[in-house]
Length: 408
Image (tube, rainbow, N blue to C red; front, side, top):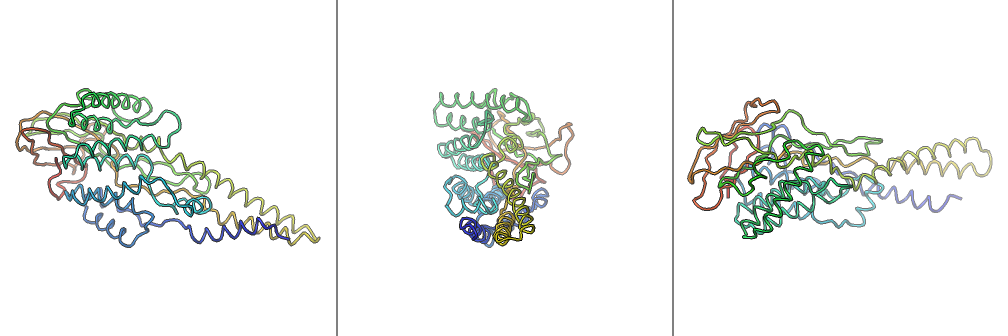
């Protein structure tokens, strides 16, 4: 007689294989994004949200909102970043998704992003609230990002994103909470020192962290192209992080031809990704890869023994061996390599005190050797208010980027 447990397990495997297939998404148009062809990228994400896999909706929403932000369509960007954040912040998973990820492909579950992707969603959400004059909501977003940064770490590499602490401090200061602001600024300095000591790029201290409240002109800059996820290990069961090489390492800004200085690195997105690359699910991936191999070996051995057995147990051994081979075949051990492929490699900041009014601002990008990168030079008109702060965000794409005003 065939063991009843094996029959049930094999039947469950067939059912789950049919219902928990991997999410298949077309390649994200990274090259058009790098070339500044934002309409092409926007159309791609629009189409995927209409007709693509719904399990990747948060990924598509983030990509769409990022393009909308760069094009100056701030209302839509705010709405789509918020929608993506709601999906990414919902930690509950249906029982069918749990079963699906145990035996089926990990990418059969809803994409909610790794901690570094949640950090960047929180950053963009908070920035848009800051532009809208809602400092309390902006600070709430930055605090949410800080919590996401610590979400699934092992050991000490957590809550080390200086950018979010500094922004939470700026919002606290704007809200009149001086003590809380100073506490966040101190956390930002500590986080930056820790990150650099553990392999992040840039200096452990910089002008933004030394004088965090300076400047009536705040410029934030996304540099380069962020990391990719690639399948590694047995059966592609581990998700590795692969940074993109050769992008800008810093920017220099000029106001009316006068240099305002070099940008300061506040968030090394590559580092954030490599030190938080889905550790919570990695153990499941490894276990599935081991089970897949063990089931295959056991199945082959059982069939081999059955072929040498001329007795009454031969049929049962053949069936058990075939069942184990079927389970090995049905088990999907490959890692989920869906990722937010249009993120920057790093986020920088620059603070400056300038006369109120309109100014011509030039942004120039440089590689690690200090050589200016051609084709990325940008010229903008910035408006610095009589009271308060002008806040701008730039990305190292071919310029000018079409769109409206991107400032508070």
